[in-house]
Amino acid sequence: MESRDQTRLIADVRYLGDAEGLTARHPDADIARRLNASIRSLRAFITTKGLPYFLTSTTATTLAGTQVTGETYSEVPFPADAVQIHGVDVASGTATGDWRPLAPISWAQRRNAGGIYPALYGSPCEFAVRAIPQGNGTTGTTAGAIALFPAASAGQYKIWYLPDFVDMDAATDVFLGLPDWHDWVVWDVVLALAARDDDQHETAGLAMAKKAELERRIVETAQRVVSAGPLRPRRARGRGLYRSR
Image (tube, rainbow, N blue to C red; front, side, top):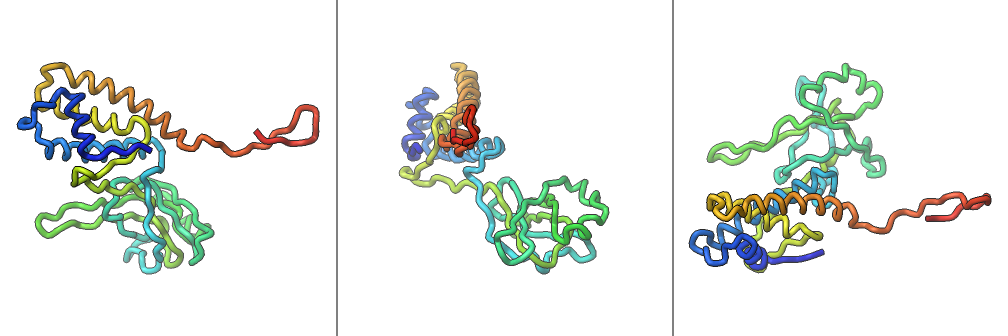
């Protein structure tokens, strides 16, 4: 795992973007802000490729009292720091040994079960995001909500999600990454600076090409974080024995 602090990343952006002398045009504070935004984009890109490295989950919470009044579904809070929802698990009892994932559906499909699920399962089988957190003027944020179908009055749930990235604030703050992650972030910022500078040196085209190549390599290397696979038994030729490979 490679580590680069904010100072190093800013220097990389200036070097590759040919902006080493443009401190008035592109102050360190502006580059740092763009670096944080690019790291967020990288985390979202990696996660949408099916890699769970940044995911976290809420603590197990009871489903009692979650049914919406006058409705056949339950509703639980959208995690306040979530950027993407990647799954909801439920357990029928208080034990954690019977967790099972819910199937994601769209809000338009909320009535498609036709009342079958409560009879067959007696607990939620599907989920849909009903609302995401939204700004509410100067009064704060309106919480989001996730609907679970059908409603449940017992059991537990937990939500798997991509949390928001905590900004690097200090020069010594670090960003950890696998091979090519840092270069992707740097080139993404170079692309943003080139767009602001009207790309007089065709830097944007180079940055886009570099990012595309890095994206391919990132997906390939990220999927090989664990190089040791499971042992799979196979029958030895001509024998009734099994051996691993």
